[in-house]
Image (cartoon, rainbow, N blue to C red; front, side, top):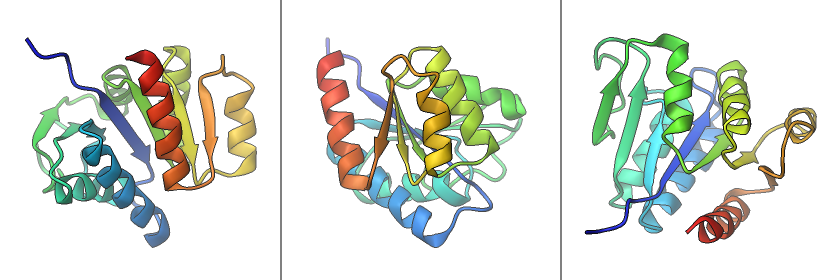
Length: 167
């Protein structure tokens, strides 16, 4: 029997995500797929979620989306497995607890709640494209699980190191 695949969550801004942030999320999705890891996002067809899923699919990866609504309406076209929850924002807990590692790409209220859940649940978090204030805030609550990345390639190096230790 094969070992369970690693699931990496990419969380980030939706409607307010900039083109630069979406470009970074796209590359993160690609790199996750290239590692043979599974990508998990919030599943919507917008912002970081859609960009990361699109990048993972372009690299032949497997994508999962944990959707807030009771239908697949608004889901990214780049999901292999859309999971309908009907949980609204409470789906953030499902997002995080399903992941081995979380990469936060940008910062908003939804992303902040996911990071808090990750740290409370002892999941490692990589902060990418987050302000210094946001990084400092989360680092003060961390038990060595918060890692700040300067760019996508650095984030992937951190992810590889963390997941190698877990493996």
